[in-house]
Image 1 (cartoon, rainbow, N blue to C red):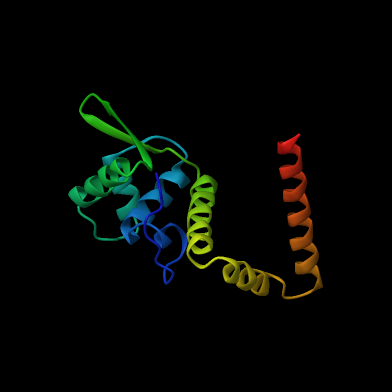
Image 2: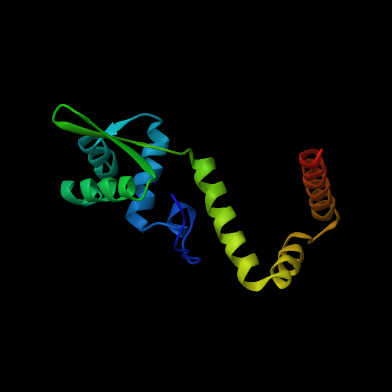
Length: 143
């Protein structure tokens, strides 16, 4: 389950998965439970969207192959559920993207990140608070 692509022109899960994969993930996160292919297909086409059953099934299987979904056979039906919450997914995306930028561009990335975040006194205080918390966590790890 590693983020391998990044589409900065997209939003949400579509930043790192295909647009239809993102819609399917959102559907499953909103459902909050295991769903079958017919249930996902019905949820995605309820608003009139034209999607074939086979397209939905293929996307669910692709997401399972990529490690984002758990897949289980129950009789004749295949059930799918997210392996991670939306929050865990987003944290993984941020960790991967920021890590890659830092690894490839080094200190200038950190400087640009601070420039983008430190736009006013409140933002600077929040950034300082977060840095202090992280420093304390690192010191605790050493002890």
